[in-house]
Length: 307
Image 1 (cartoon, rainbow, N blue to C red):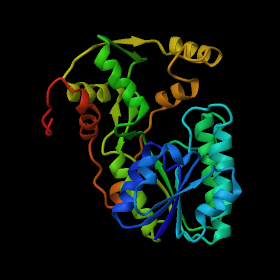
Image 2 (tube, rainbow, N blue to C red):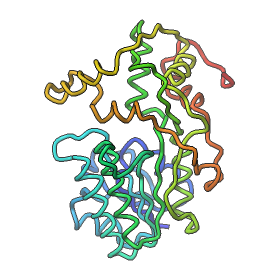
Image 3 (cartoon, one colour):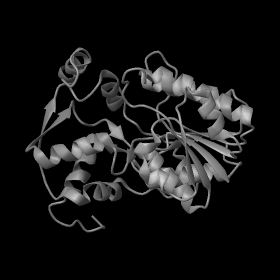
Image 4 (cartoon, rainbow, N blue to C red):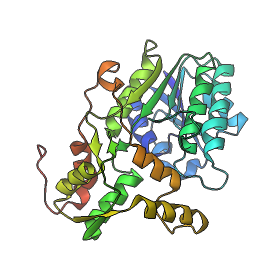
């Protein structure tokens, strides 16, 4: 099948592209600057289309003749005109319209665990929810995927935690560190996306997560074991971090976390409706496996696979 992809040049996109190529799909990938993505340009079975979600001609070229559109494009932090609203809401509506006009018969959407339209939600989650609604209202056969934090080399948040553990003798923990995450490996996410592309019976909205909910402290524990280090931790009051986060909005680079990111961290990212085993037949890998992969280049000593 010819599969069109937006957001394929990003962190998760690379994993999904590799999985789809192994399953012998032909791919057409939207890229703002194709010249920067030689790893894609030189691959057999991949065609690059220059443009973005707001270039109607590029979108038409992207989806022409495609059997499915995998819509991965998104932003974690707003930079310039790349706002949550412009990318997640308007961009998704543009992708939906192009797919519908071209007669694409399958739309697979990357959303996020926690996406909801509530006023109390972050702008990230509200705009992800708006993108979901555009897909549902389109009339296109679709699967909307809501992953928890995706654990693999290249995840910026996990890389920041690894760097702290490598270089700092003391690790700051926001509040009590009991807020929970349910990290899912990029390989498991890629498998779920591939199955959603290929199987029309997979229809609806699906939470995608790892096998266990972990506190922030437990995530740090796993990374420490993978690195072969142990660091002292200190609790930083939430009020202090929140003040610094808001101050960082006025003074760029003052704080590595935004107010929205702080809210999402404290809310946690877990689900009791994990579709990986029940819908996709995938036994999700534990976070320890991803931690070993992320930390392998920096580990002080080899860490056995069973630990």
